[in-house]
Length: 415
Image (cartoon, one colour):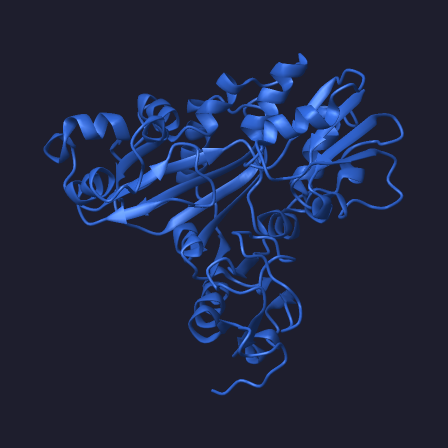
């Protein structure tokens, strides 16, 4: 087959050569220069750099213009799923189209389908509907979330004390400009409770590998500049049933998945779901706990390397792991100083620790990749409570500070 890959996620996470037989298939990777550089130098493939400055679909189509036809288009990043569908449609390649993917990207469509299946979701309205109804027309009165329909990594998400304040922020403060952009937002009630994520792989609706985790911190907090992590927890029968029902509601049947929900006294409340693997170090901790590397196992199946019935699924030994990361996009600098990390770095619970030195640049845009951010890592094995405590203590103690031009790289801290 001729396979086109929208290459955004580092090869370290995907392990393309493990999942795809590059001797049997002609594989073309289109991606930014820094991501193409993560591919093994001796990998048999075609690498095409895209500028990463404009529309993703247009950049990919321009990159492959004039090339022989492709048989498959793969897009594994949540940021690329819609673009991948549009590229398939433009090139006439079989596979998911935009309308197939919308239930996994459009939060109004997604929650409507889950609610129709009888599962609890936060009460919600599209932003145009909410503006037309006014705050008195919304079926809730408390904290209100404004978010993009297809948002990722909690970017452009805002929380307001009341629906009135949320709609006022739109109408009067211009949080979302007038015009078509408002069609791409929704408002929903803020449901209080710890947030879990369930990750795994389905084949014909049957979970072949599955793992539940609970966040320490929140994705929204990370977007706003605070650290984030998660710790693996027991997959209860209730959680298993809820997971299966949520996935079936949005027609995820043979796919990787990342599902999020809110724990409340009355049970789990659906938050969102994606037909993809989880970000940060979810893939690594999943493999440590289950023996299954999700992205490469999925690639094996979809590219015909191994038939679904021949895939192996190791038995878990019950070990639990967690991951953590510190954001850099709110620091306002390309370099940073990390203080208070030594006692945590030396803990026997640390499985992997990735820390930037003061002369190593960090990304100024939101990223979860350990090569982009000040500090990240994996902890375990251990029980859920001790891993949670380690992350909570680290988040309260470790400080990441910008190194400014007035403070040359390598300068001693005045504090």
